[in-house]
Amino acid sequence: MSDLPAPVFPPAQPGHNRGPSLDSPSLLAVARWRRAKADRKPQSGIALRMQLRRAGELGMAPGSYLALRAFCGTDIRAVVFMPDALGLRLARRLTLPDGIRGRLCAMRDVHLLCFAPPEEPSDLFRADLTEATGCAFSGCAPCPPSLLAWSEARAAARRLLDPLRLPGAAVLLVGSGEIATQLYGAARLGGQMSPAEFFGSASAL
Image (cartoon, rainbow, N blue to C red; front, side):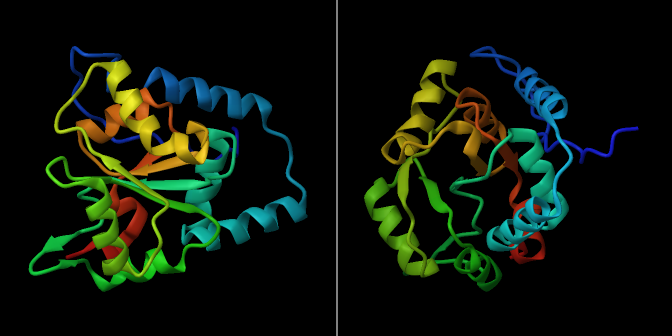
């Protein structure tokens, strides 16, 4: 039996008629998993220690990071948050749970990116989010209000990644729902986790 960690598949979502099936695991996920399994080589102690340290920099459990690394075949260079992934609340100003704020501020050597709610200007949302979290977000783009044609969904995600020249495989998407899953698949991102999976107990409101 293989000791390779279980793949990080996005949560199952209903399919739609504007592109490939959104059912989990997708063909993209299966292909990446098979490639990672075939290419796997025994890790040296130094390489393993480096990956465990990287898991700490991202605030991820070692098992979750090693599984994600094996699945996408590269290190995570950016984390994209969907509008509902950060537990944001709009009162007189944008607020979010202290646990999520602390988790974001503890992350190191990774780009923080976000999708803005469709009705809000991206630049203003990014400024409000930076003020609320105390973290510098490297980019922000409008979140699609609904499912798109597959090529349009890819373009929506690439608008966020292209300014930083980020390959899709090096990007983790934090969010749930069919729009998040379509963006993950259309842009061939490295992985997708729900807010509860990524933040753990810190995501409780």
